[in-house]
Image 1 (cartoon, rainbow, N blue to C red):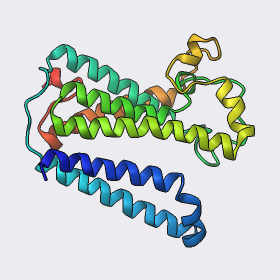
Image 2 (image 1 turned 90 degrees about the vertical axis):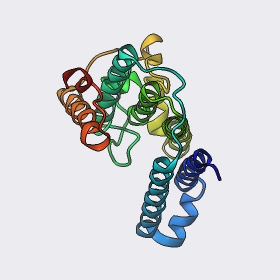
Image 3 (image 1 turned 135 degrees about the vertical axis):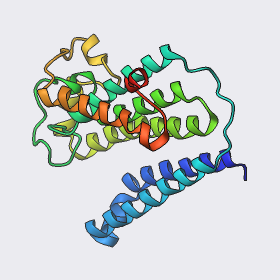
Amino acid sequence: MDGTLMVALAVAVFVGSHLALSHPLRAPLVKALGNGGFTGLYAVVALASLWWISKTYKAAPLTPPLWEAGDLLWAVATLIMLIASVLLVGSLIGNPAMPGMVKAAPAEARGVYAVTRHPMLWSFALWGLAHIIVYPVAANIIVAGGMAAFALVGAAALDAKKARLVPELWAPWKRVTSYVPFQAIAEGRARFGGFRPHDIAGGLVIWLGATWAHIPAAGIAAGIWRWVF
């Protein structure tokens, strides 16, 4: 099988297995294996499929880029990654989507939650978009695009799951938030602002560290480091 098709197959297995284990297969597997057994199975499948993606990606042929990524596109991708980093860090505290994080829906969405009720998953989607912008070759488009699509489909599936399992929490939360970034703000259901200090500071640290890590890991100066080195 062609190397690029192998990348696509590996991504499809990762996305399909994750969605299946997170939703239709979760309840019967937890019943059969217990919570610990299910968690172990989930981790093994996720790690194995990620390893396969990495292996096929490295072996895939390097196709011609679909466009030239000059400084303007690098600047756009750098800004996108900063936003993604703030969304990711902001999602780690007080997120109603995470089990046991809150017992009642906040009356008002602030910070990253005013932007979207799925800040973590949107951060992954933005990561995928940024990497496609600066490296538009076939294997990278498949991996980054697949992960972005996986995150957005996962967010929609999470909405449906939470609405079914905890309607008393999710219904009021949906009224003051939006799936699509900035929609609730545009509609007057949320106000922009209220970012906590750790959202911004932590996002900056992650952004600077992750973009710098491209230098030793891939030999590419990403983010602001592109203009520093």
